[in-house]
Length: 553
Image (cartoon, rainbow, N blue to C red; front, side, top):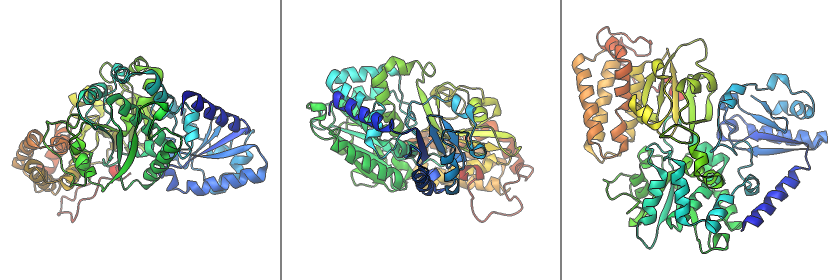
């Protein structure tokens, strides 16, 4: 495959699409599929055939506004329909070229206008199961440019200049990591894509893999060329069957097109990718535990150093980045590192994808420039808290993140700013809570999650999270004391400072942040034996822990 051949494929797609007056794009990500968008697509196809209109129906990935699904986008009019069902198919097709179907039309312009799509630029625009759709939107041009016109160091220079930091949570500079792997000696090097997304309420990686899998593969191939790797693995949760199926199809198509395998771009560069399924252990999101799992061992973390960049998979130098990080690579190579660095804040460049969930009107996937205020994400893009309730807190960073009150909503979203106020960026989960949420119960839920997901290898995490959960349960049940609260604070410090890996080191964050901003609720439970939100059963011990409603939303 060459750049000229890519141009020929892109032109053939454009010629084929030009035969039609209208494109009917149907979201077939997991969210919309759960509401039978597959049946909707079939109904639209039948309606088009019987209408005689020059239109074609395209399966797409996630369009972002999950709360309004199933979604249908009509091009070139750019008319977006929401909550579309199979019985609406004839009306939608009948409206082509005329007035839109008013009762189905979605007019949430603020939701979309405030976003900047880099990672999600193709989501909802292409068929994720057709490689030619991806190629027609500049797919694989970055890879061909890299292997034919750039040196490996030149690629790393562009990634470094972009200021891209790892989107998996740690925020480590991507260019620096690539440079370390490139300099490491070894007869074999590996590239691993971490798709082990286990945070409650998070679906960023799943949506990218379902909507634009070729983008991630291209990013991995560019990384492999830059660091000198010849083998890649995508580690993805087995609970993501649609993502796995589309990845499998994408890898097969890339090999057929000569974009994976030997002599890519008619050069000496060889690279291929395999899928490895995770069994659902949250701890396998930690890179050394992930490596152990790929090797067929129990997924438990190892002390570092040595770091995977020097001694990783089977003792060889290994580059590990997450799905969103790799999805940023191709546009950076196409448009240049300075282009990417022009977006975002001083130390957090580019954009960030968030899964916006909980007590929020516009639940879904959003992509915004770094530095945007939390208030803008929640109140403008997210549509605010529904049903007349008041905003209470937002948790960023999943179970390892912190809960931030309303007075923190005007901070700009960046790695450093979130850490400074007691939270983290994490991989991009953002859960909104309203005045019906008990913050002590929220902290207990996330500690229970970390306790359950602890691999048990180190005592501080294994025993510490269990004891923290016991103390939080006492407080929720109204039997806690101020001495228990003091012990809880002491345990948080111990677990944070002495745990082996990131799971234990960040597990206390929900407790510490709720104590910092909502300590009055702890005092109410302990001293006054009441739950201000009316969630906890103070009169008698609850029989089981239930996930807060905003997490289940």
